[in-house]
Image (cartoon, rainbow, N blue to C red; front, side, top):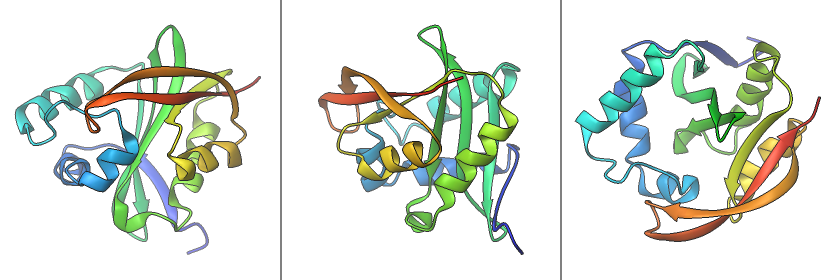
Length: 159
């Protein structure tokens, strides 16, 4: 298999895996911007129901060697189109995020595209830079996972 990372549409069976992945405290800390209570399955399901029902959101499941490794999304926030991804920790440092985001960028043609990453999430910033994103600004926001305000970079993929 030449490309070991494949994107496909999210289906309901993926949600249980996504739920388990976002319970990982280390992953949540790195992502920083998470649900107030990651263990609240009803809130998680309600959030994903909105995502699945919104045709403007590009939502893809990341498959790595036949296993659900995470998700990659494109959505509108703050009046701009942004991308986001979540990779299960067991798939970190294998190039999964870079390949998945690269494939999403082939699918989502809107430019410019934006992304956000907490400043100390060096791995995520590197993934975005490998895919052509450049830091274009900074922001601060409250991190539920860290229970404090954190600084983040805003990155942009130009035209």
